Image (cartoon, rainbow, N blue to C red; front, side, top):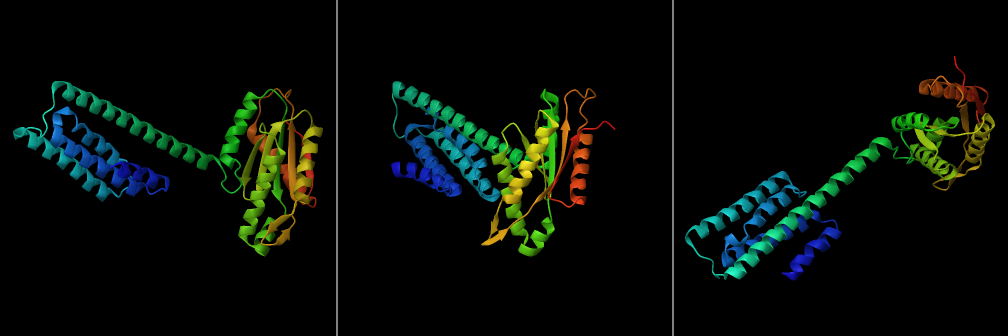
Length: 301
């Protein structure tokens, strides 16, 4: 019995959850049934079958197996109940033993229910956290996706009390990389650029993949010159980086559009206009030969 108790734990660690559940429930069900016959269902051994029903429902078994297990669970409880309509326990407990067993079984069942509830609440939280991560994160780069960036940027603009810098850039001739080396190589370039940006910028900066080969950054800035300096540093960083894919050395560059938004523009921050002006500057960089920075102060139009 001790081995059977430890065995499901070993299986769980090996991620064989279905088999672990089967062994655990079979072992505990048999134990509850036998002890119920020996000592009597009145001392609380019937409670376990209610616990088992909840455990069965939350296993990762197929629905047909869950239904079959629930039928067995209900059948065992009914058999015990019918048996004690006309039979006495095999071992008659004293009053002290009876109440000791009853209290012990009640405590164990409550503890079991609480543990199961905690376990499944944690699983539900983990699942929700995972869904939240998937809905806000670009899985290739680990950066925020476009919608998450826009939402965070809106909060950033509302909550901060400093000037804002916004940088938008596009990888030059990215289609050529995909066509020459394959899309997996292109994915590797995007992933490495994401890592470079996270290493380069502070935790207070917002970094996102805006779409395709386009990235976007938002940060607190003191002046137009600070925005220009950071943009040039990022441009040079990408230009100087060697991207290796299957022993092939790949070089690339980026075109940048950047905006400095001074806090003393007392007309409220128009997120769409900020993004549009950064995008216009990005287009100017591309039109002027790529691998360059175009930057200006935000303009009220």
